[in-house]
Image 1 (tube, rainbow, N blue to C red):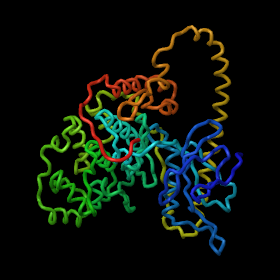
Image 2: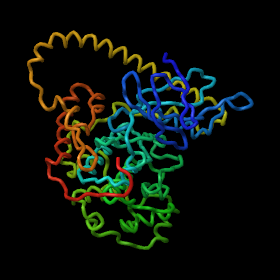
Image 3: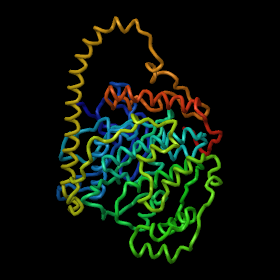
Image 4: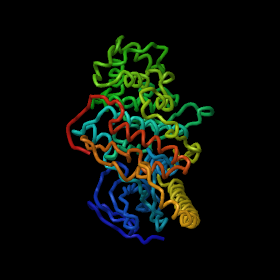
Length: 469
């Protein structure tokens, strides 16, 4: 077992293995603190998230207390989902820390890839984005959403702050604490409160429609697509009712048959919001946007979610003709099971049920990781013998550009965002089989050529104020 130590940063204590050296503070939210650290064994830079005070033994009765059952559920859900959803465009758990003592177990730590910025940082910066950059960001976002949806997982809080970006244009979605799963055949409604960020919230949710749809996430993707193009929030409502007004002002008042919601909400829409036609010529709103881009955007912003485009359909839209490759679209091999949450809502505040579930999840993940490491070591021994026998033959072979795919052509362009080989990322290939690696190489090379300007590029760019990536 790794030896642990306590490290302090900004008066915050981190109880972590000695192999990690904390480098700097990244950020803090309502549930925890994130720091950048270096793994001195591998030399890799990582992010360590401390979800603090989830459980506590500070009660005078000696029983475990937590912030709230809702907080516990959200952290446990995010942990389980990050472990389950293994995709190159979703932040993945690299390691978790098992508490040294169950009785004093109060914080949950997990280690993830270290990303350089979130999309909000870029939107508020001087960073220039060509339409090719925007196109590739959107394509990666859709790949992640499509993968989640294939596991019957709805993210429910897609917004710029939850989309992480590296300077090599790699994108990963994060913050799965609000995610939900649904069995559409057995349970088509969801009774839990919806707290998605208002500006990216679909109209059916604003109108309190109880039916769950994967297309809810697609509305959020559409809002982000538009924001990337003009660096302004598309629907910036001050309240749920004002949000509906903002949507109607741009899209027009929908036919009553296209509206999904509660009777009272629909009645408000019909009586209190005047008839409007909305924007007729979207090319004037987004002058640098191609006709194909506007077509895709409007398909994402269908008021009626039943007519809204899916992630799978969007990936196959003609807008992505220069990027599309079936090998790039992967599906989750197993559905995520949310049944573990059954009965957790009504637990008393001092219950240890979620604490025990969290501890079990951490232990199971570590045990599975050890089994995988043992398997990999055994395979490596066999590979060494085979590699040795082929070394002489291979030494006489010349290397193709593809052999250097992850080590060459990583120069940044004038925007500071590199258009080169590492856009798709080595992590993507490492997460697939050797066959998938071979198939995806053509996709990566296509992206390389696409963003380096070998394809027809738009002359338009977008800029904003603030810091660069």
